[in-house]
Structure formats: C-alpha cells, structure tokens
Length: 281
Image (cartoon, rainbow, N blue to C red; front, side):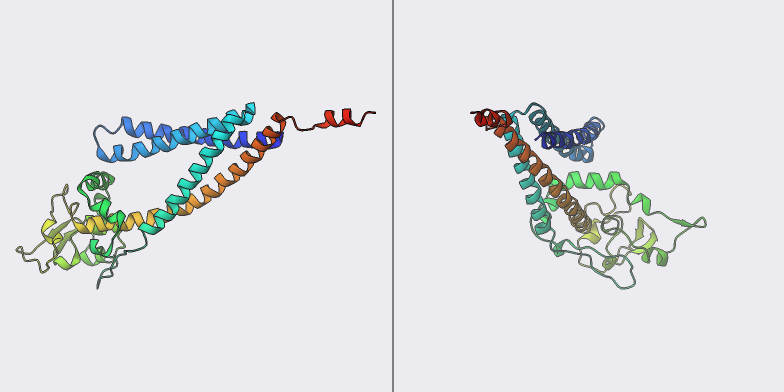
C-alpha cells in the first residue's frame, strides 16, 4: 500500500513540475502577443493544458499523501476523462487527415498543393476567414518565405537551382505562385508575369503579389500547404499522444491500486492485530 501511494505521489510530482514550464510558456506568449493573432492563437491552449495537468497532479498528490478517498476518487475520474480526451483526439486526428497530398510537377523537385485535394472538417476550418486570419498571421511571422533566399558563393541561385529544391508545403504554397500560372523566376519571392500574360484559370494566379507582405498568403495553395503541414504534424503528435496515453494508463493503474488499499484500511478490514486477538482462547 505504501509503495503504491509513494509511487503515485512521485509520478504526480513529476507531472506537476513539468506543467510549470508549460504554463510559464503560455503566459510568456500571452504577455508578448501585443495584439498579434499568432501568439494569442498559441497561448490559450498552452495555458489550458498546463492548468489542467497542474490541478490533476495536485489532486493526485493530495490523495496519495493524505489517503483522502474523496480526492482520490475525483482524481481517478479526472484521469479517465483525460485519457478519453487523448483517445478521442488520436482518433479524430487520423480521421480528419486521411486525405490530401501534394502533386508532382514536371521539372520541379518540390510538390504543388491544391485546396480541392483536401476535404472535411479541417479544410473547412482552415479556409474560413475567422481561422485563416490567425493562421496566415502565424505563417507570416514564421518568416519562412524570407528564409528561402539563398546565395551560392555570393551569387543568387538560378531558377534551375531553385526548381531543384525540396520546399516545405508552406513555402511551396505561400511563398511563390503556382507553377501552372507561368510566372517567370526572378528570385525566390519575386516572379515576373512577362507582360501580364498568365496561362491558367487558377484564381491564385491573380492573387500572387511581389509585395513581400502579401506574396501568396491569401492563395488557396497557401491554405493547402498549411493543411499538408497540419496533416504531417498531427500524425506525429498522435504518435506522441499514444505514448502519453499509455503513460497515463500506467499512472491510473497505480492510482487505482492505491485507492483500493486506502479504502480497505478505512473500511477497517481485519488486520494483523485483529487476527491475533481472534486466535486467543
């Protein structure tokens, strides 16, 4: 019994300590947002996650150290809810990222991304004006397009060198016009339409701008690039969540064992002293 209580106390102390930097990071992002949509968008989930972990860990510590059955009961219920949330997110993440990928283009090492290749809940959220305002703010502030610039021995890279690069989905969709538009390469983020003739019905061709603050941030290809990135990221996060879920299940088993032992003691079941009394004539 003592071992299970000590172990659950130790595990919850570790999770409590780990929640502190997560909470600090969320508060830091919130205080540095200065009206910036991207940082606001990231800060709130971090704070919610950190506070949830902190409250649950404190409940586990209190229940284990003081053998409080009510607190332990609440802790076990909270653990079940958290595990169900993790399981739900894992299933949901795989369900909404099951379709959509980049398309190969002739004479290009990078892929092209089209919004019509994606569908479902995630696409609807990304392409909505409310969410896209926040997401595009994050893309701009990441400065991924500025990082595209490359010099070889002090000379800007040629068009052929650029076409041979493996761009990220966001760089391919947001930092350059779609290949089918027929723009002529000047440098990584400056493209010429050669007299304004662009041979494509793709609406993104008219949205492209050489203004470094605009580029193709409002293009459907940019939204598709974000979706491709989310798909890859969510799949990776889901793998981590599976590991976390197994860890939480281990904690739950130990906590349940401690709860049963504490309840057995409080119910005054026969202990060693009682048995000795009964054996006397």
